[in-house]
Amino acid sequence: MHVVHRGFDTIALSIQANISQELFDLLNTERERAEEERHPVPFSYGGADFDLLPHGGNGYRFILKGGPLDVHWSFKKPNARDPWGIRVSVGSTLLATQGLGYARSYIDKTLTRLGIRFESHQVSISRADFCVDILAPEFELVPENFVIHSHTNRADYLSAQDDMRSNGKSGQFTSVTVGKMPGRQVIIYDKRREVIDKKKPIWWDVWNTNLEREGLPPLDPSDASQSRVWRVEVRAGKDLLKDRWQIRMWPQFDAMFGDVIAEALKKIRYCEPDPDDGNRARWSNHKMWDLVAASSEDDLLEMRSYVDATSIKRVHRNEQIRLIMAQLAGLGITLAALEDTQEIELGEFMDSVGGRLAESINADPERAVSRLHEAKNRYRFIA
Image (tube, rainbow, N blue to C red):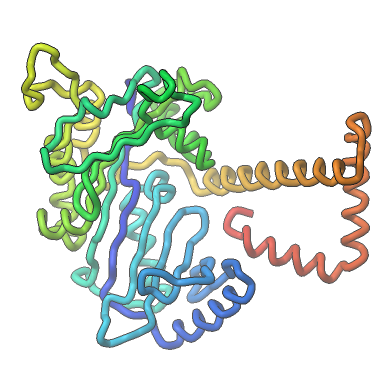
């Protein structure tokens, strides 16, 4: 077993401030356009660039995304009676590659560009997830090996049917979740499977960058027997942070969040069963659990993988190109079938499709140029 990544996975916070009327009016106009076009539209203000979604949510009028770094900005309509008008959610890509310190600075700089002023006491942290990724190809997850409080909830998730070991009588578990948000939640899951299923190729770069820094060979994504990575994740919701630990602002978070993680790993343990001891509380921790606990004892704030922004863009761009090429090939084959093309003629048919596409563009060049600009705007963060 070997740690291939550790760090924050999600940070969510609310800010006691409202956007200006000028910014609201601009966002409102652009959101109407996004609703009409039924897709996100580019939005820039004060030197900050976003994609504005065509909908709001959870009481927020506007939701904006800041490119492949996985940051969401939610804004309410300005209202003096509702001063908590801003929510920011930072996802795993930014936190894993750049670290929490960078994320906090990025939030402050972006809000400054938007003309939003606030003091440190006007920040309220509502969620923080911390994770440790462990290379453990031989590990098998057994839900019954958790030792937890009798009132703690546990949800088990089985793998796909074709991975069942005995026709549904017993299965290979890929995820076990203990606890419930917005309190405390601890989850173990097969991160390799999620990366492949949900098409998140950036994680291979994160893991391999960390391995390279230790002088170790990279993982081969195609070989599960040597690249199976399990994630142990501790999720702290607002009830745990504010009610149990009195954590609301960054200074309190900096001082106590390490203790939040340590307590979670003590109250919820994954153990090695002892057949000679019926008292589960006396079972020893599984070596994975001890490895996670040891990895969480250092300064948590600056953990990162050192994957640079250019690499992040490259990975996202290459994934989009791969998906679009697969779609083009599929559409071309479908068209060939509709036109009764024979198998031996398929290559020649595909060549002819390129010519037909060129003719279509030449027939209406203005529309083609307009569509090109729209596509460039849509992918401007990774192009």
